[in-house]
Length: 237
Figure 1 (tube, helix red, strand yellow):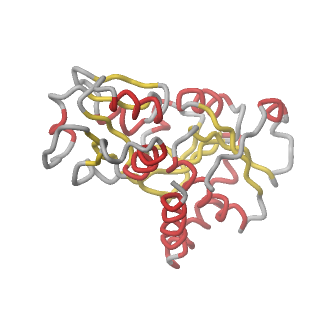
Figure 2 (cartoon, helix red, strand yellow; figure 1 turned 45 degrees about the vertical axis):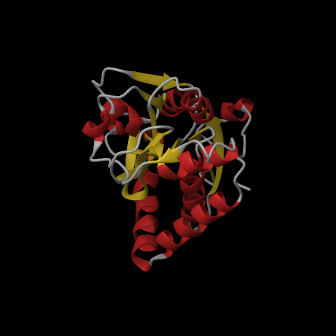
Figure 3 (tube, one colour; figure 1 turned 180 degrees about the vertical axis):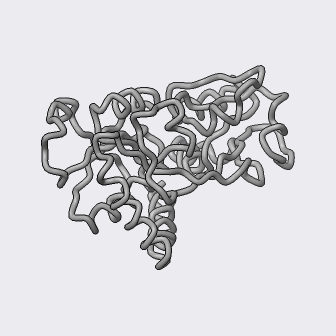
């Protein structure tokens, strides 16, 4: 099961004076791809003898906690995050990628980038940066509180299409037993490389984590781990 590990907010009271053998990261609740990225990072940090714990919260809350230093960072976010949250430092290379995809109940068309959905009413999950950026300036966008909420709203015809990463959308639709009604359109809108972020107080840790990610990427270990995790998530829903 990919069921998330919830860390009590009381644990966050522990300050940065703790030894760096435990890192707490914000994780967007109920987003399967955040589980995949978190488990990939767990393997990365294990090579540095550092244990990870996750705080499962909505997307905007995650950024509030991480940018304020209430947790130590974010599992994975889009590459431009530091422009809006300068206290969060990007770790390179990318830890993961997402493929934002369009899901529908009635419409069928070949997706040709974000512009191909601009004339429809669109559901996104509030706080998911890739969805917010891709639909910016579009006329009819509804930001929902959670992925499950968005799927239910699409099922109720509250909007024409919804956008979420392909994996998370497939899992959510299966979980709610709506796969006979809700389906992804092809191809995905794009592939976006996403990055791990640490709060600036962990500046010295950034290159160490980046080095491990680069080594695991070069050896093929990272890609194999991602594939195995995606299969696990899909198999349990």
